[in-house]
Amino acid sequence: MWNNSITRRTMLQGLGTAVALPWLEAMAAPVATSVTAEKPIRSAFLYVPNGVSMQDWTPAESGNTFALPWILEPLEPYKRYMNVLTGLTLDKARPNGDGPGDHARAQAAFLTGRQPRKTNGADIRVGQSADQWIAAKMGEHTRFASLEIGIEPGRSAGNCDSGYSCAYQSNFSWRGESTPNPKEVNPKFVLERLFGNGKSVEQDAQRAKRDQYNRSVLDFVREDAKALNNQLGAGDQRKLDEYLTSIRELEIRIEKAADTKAARGPVPVMRVPDLPPREFIDHVRLMADIMILAFQADLTRVVTFPFANDGSNRAYPFLSASIDDKNEAVREGHHDLSHHGNDKKKLLKIRAINRCHIEQVAYILGKLKSVTEGDKTLLDQTMLVYGSGNSDGNRHNHDNLPILLCGGAGGKIKTGQHIRAAKETPLMNLYLKMFEIAGCPTRSFGDSTGPLPL
Image (cartoon, rainbow, N blue to C red; front, side, top):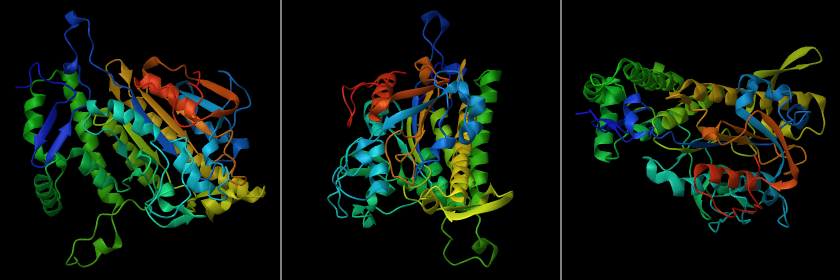
C-alpha cells in the first residue's frame, strides 16, 4: 500500500499515535519529471537573557577572515555555516518614556520590534512575532504551524518587571498583539504532542498504556513501520531505522532525566507528575533534539526556543571560572552577575555562562548537520537566529546586540562572515530578509527600515 504514495505527509499510525517520517529517497519524484522532492527551509529562534560579555563575544575583524573570540570558540567547527552580526539595535526594548523594565521589554520586543504596553494587568499588547509571521504564511504545509518550547516556566499574569506583566518575560512567541503562545518546558509533553494523533480519547488511552506497561510510542506503530520497511530500499531502511531509534533514545533520556527521589520510595497513591530534567544542559539538549526531530519529520518549520526568561537569575554551579589562578564555581545568579559593575570576578563568571550557552548552540548545529535530506543536511536547510535583547547586561543597552545567524537557508545566505551593520540598524531588518528567504516577504515589520543585506 506504500508504493508510489510515500510523501512528507505519510505517517505511521497506531492507537493515539501518528509518527511522521523523515525525508526518504522514496519520496523523491521520478527522475523523468526533473523535479526533486521538496526540501523546505526551517526557521528557529533561540534566545538568552541578560546580554553577554561583549568584549569576549565580538570578533576583531569583519568579513570572512575573522577569528572567533573566546565565547564563540565552541562554534569553530561550524564557522562556515554561520554569520556573526554586530551593530543591530532593538529600539523598542529601550524605555522610550516608559521608565525601567528593560528585561520585560527586551524579550517582548526581540521578535516583534514593537514597544510593549507598560501594564501588569490584562490589557497587554506588543505585536505579532517574526516566527508567527512565517508560521501564518507557511504553516499550512506542516502538521504544526509552529512549536514553542523553552527551559524556564513563567507566569502569564502579575507584575514581573517594574510594572510590566509577567506575560512579557514568560512568552517569546506572540500570535497577535495581545495573544502570546505559551512555551512548553517539559520534553515529555512536547514529544507526546508531536506524536499524538489529535484524538484526545485515543491519546489518553495510549498514555495510560505507556505509563502502565512502560511502553514506547513506537510500540503502537510497529505493524505500520514493518509494512513500510518492506517496501523501502536499503538506504531508506537504514535511515528509517536511525530515525525511529532516535525517537526511542529520546524517550529513554526523558525517563532518566525526570527520575525523582520520590520514585525510589513507596509507590504513591497518585502517580508522581512527570517533571522536566533537573540539569540545565540535559534539559536544553533534550529540547533541542526534539526540535530537530520535529524539523526532520517536517512536523513544523518554525520553532522558538528561549534558554531562559529575560532577567533569569539561574545559578550555574556546574560551571567554573579561573579567578586568581583558582577555579571558582558560578554559584551566583545569572542576572546578579550580569550587573557586574566591571568587577573582574563577575565578568569572568558571566562569560563562563555565555560560553556554556554557546556550547549548546554548537551541539544544536552539530545535530542539524548530522541529519541528511538527499544531498543536503538540515543545517543547509535551516535559518537559526541566536541572540539576546540586551547587549551589556550591566548597562541594559539595546544597541550592538549579540546576534548569530546560522545555517544555509537553502543556499540563499552567504555564510562564514562577520557582518557589521550600520549604527542603529533595526534587528527587524534581519527578519525582513528571513521572510524573503522563507517565501513570505513583507514591506515592513515592527520598526524595520528594509531587509538586511546578507
